[in-house]
Amino acid sequence: EAQVTQNPRYLITVTGKKLTVTCSQNMNHEYMSWYRQDPGLGLRQIYYSMNVEVTDKGDVPEGYKVSRKEKRNFPLILESPSPNQTSLYFCASSWDRGHEQFFGPGTRLTVL
Amino acid sequence: AQSVTQLDSQVPVFEEAPVELRCNYSSSVSVYLFWYVQYPNQGLQLLLKYLSGSTLVKGINGFEAEFNKSQTSFHLRKPSVHISDTAEYFCAVSPNTGNQFYFGTGTSLTVIP
Image (cartoon, rainbow over all chains, first blue to last red; front, side, top):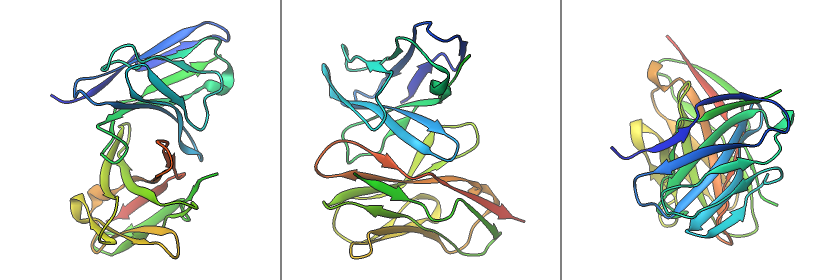
């Protein structure tokens, strides 16, 4: 089954404790992206990747890092999480910008 | 800077009535346009997209949208809604100068029996 998986689905952590949210897709897509969804703000793009070893900043990259060492994986790293990063995070993948993005189920992160 | 404005945050509509969800964007360059739907506790699914060509785009579940370049709008319409259409709808724009996506703040559509 074609899908985008994210782990963990739920995470509660404390300020400053490094964490990684994994994202994996099995569709051989080249374009992958991370978004955060906040009430009243919609989805905002954090980072995206056009292919292996090619990543670029989205609209709200501060406080986040990503890597794309393999085509299927695109982890999101929070080196020192802060409460303002409490949000619902979605990973997505597609063939390219003009094609449908397939979204993962989301990761709900709470930073205390 | 790009922006996407969804003019209505909430739209209640009776079952079998028509609905229009409005989306305007600001961009000085040509764009790709998308509408996504999000059902409760799920990720987003593509309804339809406009890349080029005919300005009237048909999507899944009976939805359609019309691209209006002069008004920089991409409104979503459905002639007769069902209870199952109750969901959050997002308009998204990707300017042709880059590979970023910009989403609107969403419109919550509630279909009333």
